[in-house]
Image 1 (cartoon, rainbow, N blue to C red):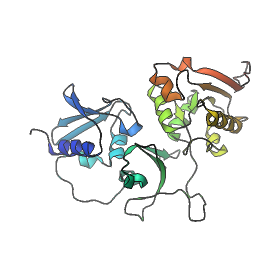
Image 2 (image 1 turned 45 degrees about the vertical axis):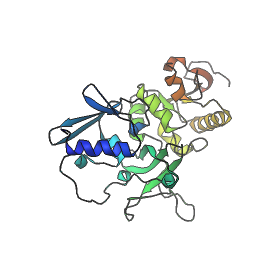
Image 3 (image 1 turned 90 degrees about the vertical axis):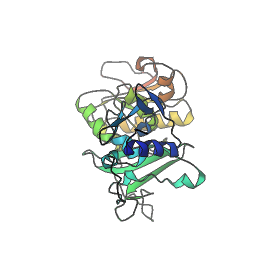
Image 4 (image 1 turned 60 degrees about the vertical axis):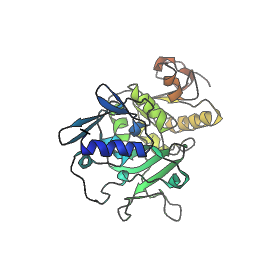
Length: 286
């Protein structure tokens, strides 16, 4: 074979993870593990001199994809790498439900305003979610709990994609809030600043809301009872904080991911509530 060693290692790794790959346009392509994508051609993998090139067209780079598969930039080179310590906790690919045959399909990194890792969330192919925090004393570099043995939280509470969120607020852009990370990436993939809280419905707090002071916010409520309750709770934290708050729902399906997957655009979301209308706009009662 003419494939470089690094190319072979990566192809073998993806195969062992159960990820489908195919050749098209002269490169090996696979889906965006880094953002939970389902398009089979989002990530391009190409043989280059001395190694392999990887590029995710959604993330516009390779850092998040490499983190999702447990690689670093050094692994892209042909020379076999010796065993190395886990210098970044996101490099470890083990998940708590692995003993049940589950495989990790996405990892979401929560960072503070300066881009420093606070904690992570993993999602498996059976839709199990697990949260972890960096723990340098562990061989894996992580510990699968955000709390101590007494139940006290040990990490800051931050919304997903906080650095990007702060840029959007400063630029006076509308910020979208979804119920989960997969929906956030569906919005981001369509060009909209978006965020959520870790843990799904019912976990949004005033600590998340504080970063949206003076912002214009659109909440995408899931189309079920929990979705409505979650949206109401988010609205409650944003009153007196955000400049405006609107609540919308998907035209098709349950959530933002379903809405875009069905071919709809942002202007086709159904507005169901305007609890904090933009100054001068009429209020809409849910």
